[in-house]
Length: 205
Image 1 (cartoon, rainbow, N blue to C red):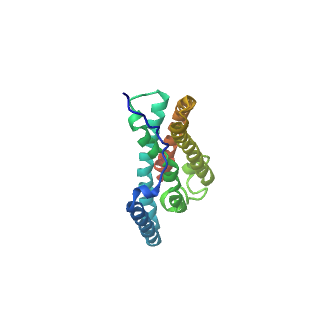
Image 2: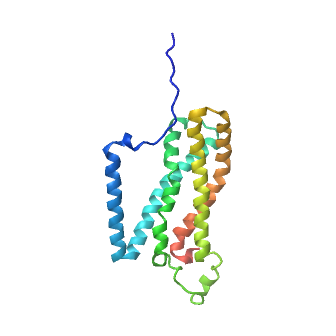
Image 3: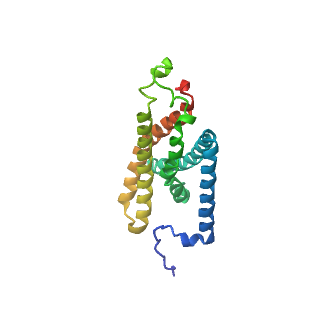
């Protein structure tokens, strides 16, 4: 006689499940933000560089998870099903890590050397002004943010939604998103690295 099967419930985050640790990590996060603010007051340049390094560290972790989710769906892989939800939970934090770039932008002139150089001072830089301009720099960030966030949130939304309705259409939708998301991911990650890391010294660009 076969045992009855239980229907899987959709995954929903509940802070109560984390117990006391949720509050502990929230407090530690607030303490860290306070310490960072104090550091920015005394040495804004060091704060900017340190903040940028931290953002890049966590951004590469979340974007790396997004890459594997994209590959999973684009190739219709089966082996990665066991770890897919873990990768989705990490990938969905991509927009959060990108939002944490905002403090770095607020002290941009202290960390990106080209930011504060006026037109006419460096002829080699003037030739690159079409790319290295404040407005275009921030516009590119917005493009990376929207592109990666939409892909990550749509993939996880369909995955969690499939837990409820079991619709095979969601599998096809995620496959299409995986295929379309790979060039978006490649474009965003490549140019983001050029902007935020190589752009620390405009001569590299």
